[in-house]
Amino acid sequence: MQNGLDNKSFRHLKKLLREHDIRIEEMPAMRLASDHQAPMSPQEEEALFQDAMADVNPLSGAQKAEPRPRRPQAKRHPKEEDDVLTSLQHLIERGRGYRVADTPEYIEGKGFAVPKEMVRRLHQGTFAIQDHIDLHGLCVEEAREVVDDFLSKAVKQGLRMVLIIHGRGLCSPGNPVLKSRLEQWLRRGLWRKWILAYSSARACDGGAGATYVLLRSRPMTKRRRKRLMHENEHIK
Image (cartoon, rainbow, N blue to C red; front, side, top):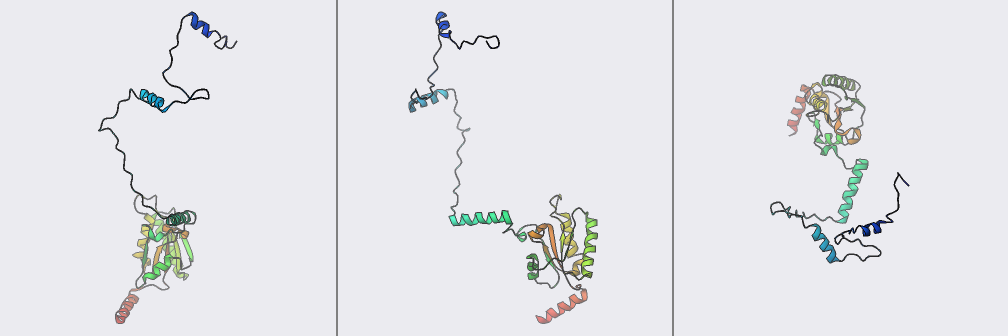
């Protein structure tokens, strides 16, 4: 006995059905293949499918979804695919192949009478970094004071190559604030006469979130500028 019920495993079911003349209707032709029963033939399967779909209404012409044509894919040579995958792996694992100069975040500039080659060499890391500052967490006014103090000390100490870390400004609603202001200070501010060149740093030194600054040994004064312009005219 379990839970007050007598479990007799349907022992008297046949007798009960016979005494009360109860008949069990046979199920439609749904058979499962087993070890003792042959599997359904394709005709039987099709008849079963059609019976199951009898109440399904087909979509009208306007509702039918037209199959999208497949776009032909350009075939790549196996060697080309291997080269692409290898380059991608090197980019992910080691950063090899990534060039800050190829991104929209890259900035650069140069002073008067400075060849373009100087900027290229600067970005390539030709010059050793002699000092650096980090402007993270500073507002514009604080950053301006820190940059002025830093460059003033660098000039007095005779430093030629410094790094200013300002961040990429990804949290700024518009353009990167500190990065944009720093470029203004280097290009138009007090320090423009001391700037030989500047450029976004390489990825290993901060990438677009840092700027190399190459300083002159002496400022480019108006008098010196006029003299250089005069000499250039004679050379031409």
